[in-house]
Image 1 (tube, rainbow, N blue to C red):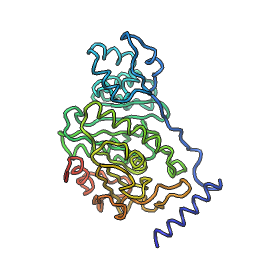
Image 2: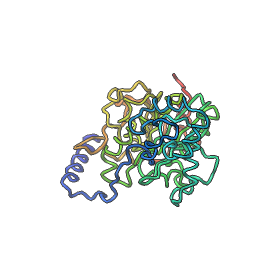
Image 3: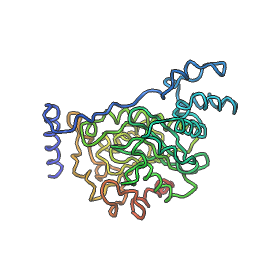
Image 4: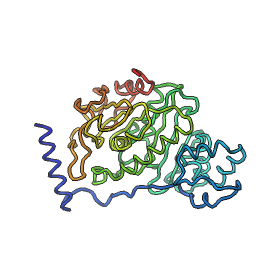
Length: 348
């Protein structure tokens, strides 16, 4: 009965929005940042090494990795200094070079929105793109030596400015990643990945899949870049709208586990519909407001069945003591302990 009622609500909502009479926020519509890294035009025309550099848009992460493997230490450093924005964001570049390049970009930048990212010289910034609202990825731990790697994919209202905000810490990618890293220990590494344009507020963007589709492409390429750099296959933790991104990317992602929490749906009917070999997990606590979101997809609105519903077929993660929509990574919770066990490969 409850599902039937939700379906009626979703149909009514879709009809209203399509008719143009909804009270949804439309002024916050976001334009997804896509394409190659900033500075790619200068990179393409540079012949400092006496040959063409790999095209940031057309070269695969594997091709990028192969190119960098053939460079000397001095040649690599030349490219870091001449093109920090490209080197810092180009999937397939060795992670050590990306850290160095992004540190240069942040030190040279003058946008106050991103000043906090460069305050601590010890931070390992794996990606930094200042376009739009800004995108960033940060690593906790040593990716090169870690036996287990995890990636955290956030949901709405996250960008370079809110990436590591000090309020609602466990609703931020940095806060979630730090908490998971503290629980898994020094033999692991966790990446906080805010590498796509997220929805802002509760509006049409959050109810549709266009931003998630663009995000899925970027997440897939990012994961391919880790593989090309011989980083351990990761487990991916997808929060809220981030689970829509992960659902659309699932069939292309080479990952050990997909874990969704506070999910509005994955744009799939069930686990089989994801077409993934990864283990799929789902968590949702009883106080999470996402439970009030209709789990249907009508006229392009909504993201389909609830992954935490047993009928979906995902493995269940205990979340009884998590609180609200952003409490899943809070220290001491059953959900965080379960996430850590998954990240460490338990049950494989």
